[in-house]
Length: 123
Image (cartoon, rainbow, N blue to C red; front, side, top):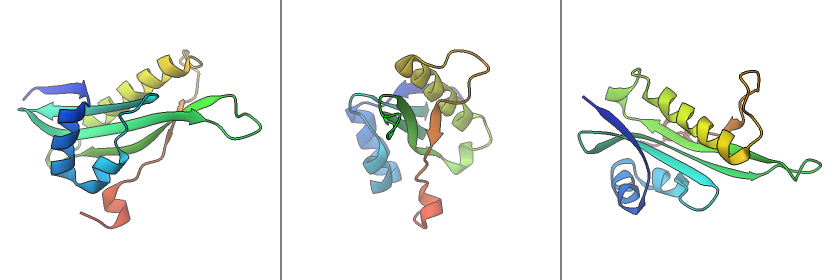
């Protein structure tokens, strides 16, 4: 079982929306200043993450931060490190895009705002 991680394009977005529903489609970002990644096993999406950047509010509005909007891993693939890998790769993207956090001592640059379907009572 090989798991491949790749950025979400229009075709993958359709597959993910068909499998995970409207919540996934609504919260996957494909515009500039965003990063969406899918984990694929045997040509089937088994998990994904989507994050975006935005300016912080005043008085530090000139700074940007990154936010995870949604993360999901199929039940049968949980506890295999897939979510950890998705978050790690997203943090790497955020550190490059935001260019303000490169040292090990730096706190996480990503704020985890997760709209998890199970926490919202759906699925």
